Length: 446
Image (cartoon, rainbow, N blue to C red; front, side, top):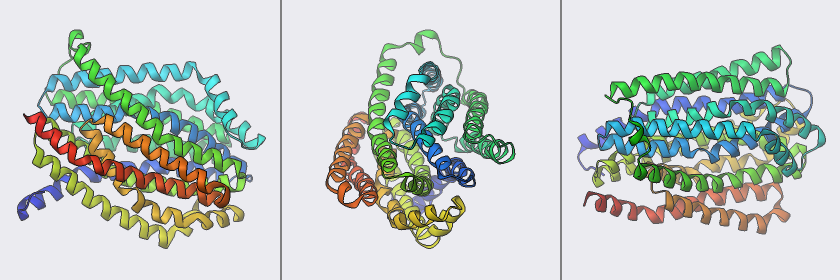
């Protein structure tokens, strides 16, 4: 990290000039799930909360698996930006949008078997499954739009255009909140209203984002790439190599969250609903730390593309410093006001009581997860995806071992313990690999 006071101040300003728009954008993102849960919590049966929890978990698992579209695009675009390869910036975006459209249409075509498989996996009550099926079959129509949105956001992060990314995210999430309230509380559409509000908002954001990213690329001097450049074998091989490893990595990330909801459903509707409330607090924390991880992606990728080891170390160091500060702040906030957040999200006394029983796990979650989020950002920005994939698999094994040892005796506390171990293991494994990353930056320069 730079030693002069001027350089330190410059890096602090640089980190926060990129981070604050993503903080605001990310703070609106968990509002979607929180408002979904709060709206359902105003209805007279816990099954409504459980149904949205099951449906949202299925879509989160699918979309997080396809998160490689955003992550891979960010890393590749940031490195092209650092190398000042303007033509490749445009080609990277078009390749990612094309892949997103094909994947999204494939999900729509497979909507019925996917919904049947998802409901078969969950051991929820018959009422929860019926409501969740209605949610799943309607929301799937937003799949192409949200995946295109991922690709658009990846390019904007790579270009360090965080303000534009903020505008697109706020449009998506605020629109979803407004439509949730309108469709459910005003029109009385139930879970179908939550699903309809989400997929309408996703299409609006996708169209707006495509227009904005096209304008930003033109400002950087990019022009429409030739077909030969789009289909360049070396570039396509790099894209699919990065995407494949990130897809596997995302699958390993989602398995614990998916298992968390599946096993929670098996513990009863009361525990399922309590976990659904608490996981919204976890997502608030996750999106806050993710803002600095996105900054780490952009700065690390730019430094790696520019072949600058000193800047890579500074990018990693300063983003880690501020990540720890944010994690400490969130932990204190949850310790002081966690009960109030629970009461806001549900009016059901039995759910409030159950959620408070497991609240301490959410209080420690930011400190357990801060290293995992930060190092994910550094390794994604530098597209060291093999290391990400292997580390995530090792952390998954730690999660499964913890479940095997504790679930029978600790029940839902065992689920939360396993999630905590998973986050800590990710930090340890990636932290051990970071010195190799700096050496790779030197070998790239050579």
